[in-house]
Amino acid sequence: MKPLVSILIPAYNVETWIADTLRSAIAQTWLPKEIIVVDDGSTDRTLEIARQFESEGVKVVTQRNQGAAAARNTAFSLSHGDYIQWLDADDLLSPDKIARQVDVLQGCQSRRTLLSSEWGYFMHRYQQAKFVPTELWSDLSPVEFLRRKMQFNRHMQTATWLTSRELVEAAGPWDTTLQSDDDGEYFCRVLLASDGIRFVDSARVYYRIVGTNRLSYIGASDTKKDAMWKGMKLHIGYARSLEDSPEIRAACVNYLQNWVRVFYPERPDIMKQVEAMATELGGELRTPSLSWKYAWIRSLFGWRQAKRFQLLLPRLRWVLTRSYDKALYRVERIAKRHA
Picture 1: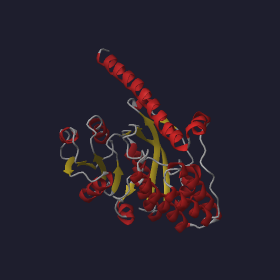
Picture 2: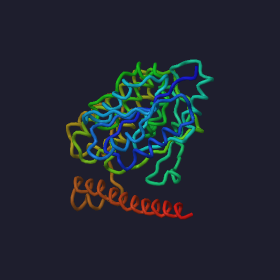
Picture 3: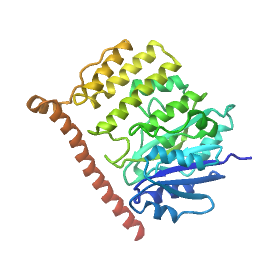
Picture 4: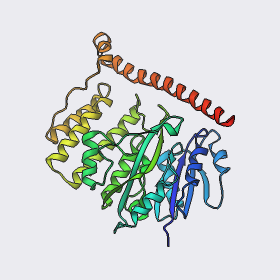
C-alpha cells in the first residue's frame, strides 16, 4: 500500500496567508494524504478561513494559545500518517514536493532515512523566490550535517523535511519552552535518531519572509535570548554526542562566535557562559564587531546605541522592500484579472 502522508500546519493570526498555504497543501499530487490545521488561539479570522477548507481530507481544530511547538505536538497527536510533512501556515510547497521525496524513498532501505529539499525565500510573490544552494543541500550523515550547520551558520527551513513516523516518535515532542530556534533544536533530535539525510533537489519549498513578527526573530527580547542560549547549548551537546572530534569542537566554537552578538553587551550573564564554553571546547571568542555603517555610532554613543541602530535600520529597510514587493504583487493580480 502507498504510505499516507500527514501535512501538519500550526496556525496563529495568519488570516492573510492561511488560504494560500492550505491550497498549496491540497494541491499536493501525492495521494493518500491528510491535512491537519491546529489553530493556536488566533484572535483574527485564521480559524474562520481555515474552516472554509474543511473536508474529508482536511481537519481543522483549535486550542488556547500555547505557541507553535504546542500546536505542532497537538497536530501530530491527531495524525495517522506514515510520513510527516511539517508546514508553517504562511509557507508554500511546490505541487510535487512530497511526491518527489516519496519517490526517493523507494530506493531507501531504512525508514529512518530523513529527506530534505530545496527552499527559497520570498515576500508576496512566490514566483520570485530565490533558491540559493548551501553546504547543507546534499546527502549527509547526521554528524556532518551538524558540523556544516554550525561551521557555516546554515539551516534548513522546517518544511523541507519529510520525516517517517518512526523518526518523529523516536525524536520526541517539540520543546514548548523554546521561543526561538525551536525547529533547529527539534530537527537535531530527529537527526540523532536518523540513519542520515537524502537531499531531493527537485522538490521545492517556498519560505515566506514575514518580518520581525516571525518566530525566529530575536531582537531585544530577553526571553528569546534565554531560549536562544538554551537551544545553542543543546545543539552543541547533540553534535558532541555523535562525535567529540577537533573538527566538531572547532565548528561549535565558530557557532558560538556567529551568535555571541545576540547577547553582547546587554547580557553579561550569558556572555560569561558562552566564553566558558568556548574555552572548554579549546577555542577563544573575539569581541563582536560592527560593520562600518554602525562603528561610528559606537564611537559617539557606545555599543548599546550602536546595536539598537543595527536592529532598527534593517527593520526599516525590510518594511520598504516589503511595501514595494506588495505593490508589485497587487499590480500583477490586477493585470491577471484584466488579461
